[in-house]
Image (tube, protein in one colour):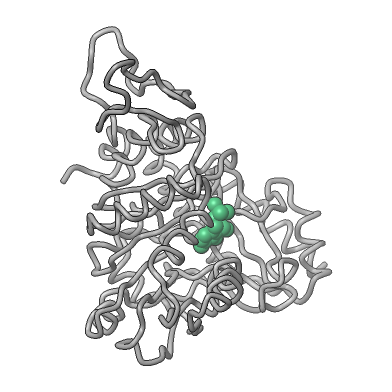
Amino acid sequence: MTGDGTRVVHAGLPSPVPGRSFLPGPAFGAPYHLDPVLGPQPGVDGYGRTDNPTWRALEAAIGGLEGGECVTFASGMAAVSAVLLSVLRPGDTVVVPADGYYKTRAFASSHLAERGVTVLEAPTAGPYPALDTVRLLLIETPANPGLDVCDIAELAARVHAGGGLVAVDNTTPTPLGQRPLDLGADISVASGTKALTGHSDILLGYVCTRDPELAASLTAWRGSTGAVAGPFEAWLAHRSIGTLDLRLARQTANAAAVAELLASHPAVSSVRWPGRPEDPAYAVASRQMRRVPGVVTFTLADKAAVEVFLEASALVFAATSFGGLHSSADRRAQWGDDTPDGLIRFSCGVEDTDDLVADVRRALDAVVA
Ligand SMILES: Cc1ncc(COP(=O)(O)O)c(C=O)c1O
């Protein structure tokens, strides 16, 4: 296999044709021309809710990186809900992360529970309930925002013993950071809104699997619900994936430097980054991950301290996403996460490391001044 930089630059591109662009532009079409006599034909695009060549190119790119067949969706939540609703039936049991993305938990406890699915929650670092009776285990590793990690292969073996399925939310690592399907998961599902595309300008989601029946049922689900990405978003995403290796390399380097600073600063009471040898998640993360993402979570004294930190920083945007070019910080309690008032999910951008560290140091100093 070639290196990550080479793989992302060439991911999903058509073979070179003289006079054509490297990445063909977005194909905009609601209806496409039909053969006036034959009508709809298999393999010929007919309607934009089910067929689009720009998606197919993007799906070839992401599917190649994840190592499975890819189905794209309008957003990460469209992808997560497609997995949950198309796999689970009344009477089934699903386990979702107690400390993962809060909307996934909220979706499960409302829409799934009222459809007769038993919803259990488990902390990412465990303990997990009996897994040989669950239909679906959805894990998020590293979990967002606490950054705990779980052993995908070990959990997959426990679920598979009872015939269930394992889905991994791979949003934070991206397929360059972790390949859940190689580790035994049945499904890798993610928001492409974050580091995968990384420019804070599109919403996207995807699901990858090696099971052709599951891929077909997710594709059918998307066609019926209409949870499709727009062609322009799909094209922007594909273009952005070409720099994924470069962006992640800088984000991870920045996270390593910022985590060290945070660990030694008196304004900070705790710091989590699975790339630090002192971190409880370090052992499993270094075994199963190819790279550690650029997200660091730390805790200041309280809400007021976070306000001082954000106002004193010149580079860090207050924003609730992560994985983008720009460093940003989010006080998670303001969204209802069950976290301390001063807990910040900090997303390292691709600024120069020295500049970012100096800026964060100034902002932390302002907190204790
Ligand atoms: C881990 C995780 N999964 C899924 C989502 C949902 O993605 P989207 O906002 O693209 O719907 C998010 C969004 O923050 C997330 O952090």
